[in-house]
Image (tube, rainbow, N blue to C red; front, side, top):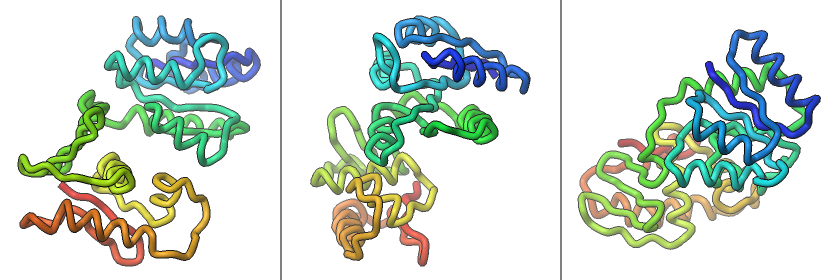
Length: 223
């Protein structure tokens, strides 16, 4: 793999680069967001490993800029900012994975390998699809079989979460953290209530059910 490491701490950057090179990877190491933007735009990388706190252009701005320019190279944020809110904002900015410092190098290596195996589709940056269901993230519009579906902001967020993880079971806890920014179980049926409302709009008027309940596990959207 060809990897770009963006890390302004010299010791950490050298440690990561050395470890990845020992595994046989090709690694470029830069220390600022400006350098990273030039390298990522001009080079063909399999994965970008990006610190959030960088001089000049910070990591979040860097990734947003790349995504806005159509660059879909997988990004692993590697940062000391580890709150739930930090992780969510990083993923929403265009990151594909998030690892908090201090970290185990073995986990970093495994996450990088997993990201490199993922199929890349530029269209997913602005449009998500699950069979006949289409979500335009820029226009904030949802359609199914050509019919507009009006969703409230929370319903839109739930559907986006499920569509980004199409085919994978999402637990109640995952939805609470991603959509409500709640890292504990409030012991209410807020998730179930919103899923029910979402189904009434997305599934009920049509012949095929897309949002599935996986008993004892959570929810999944299927094509």
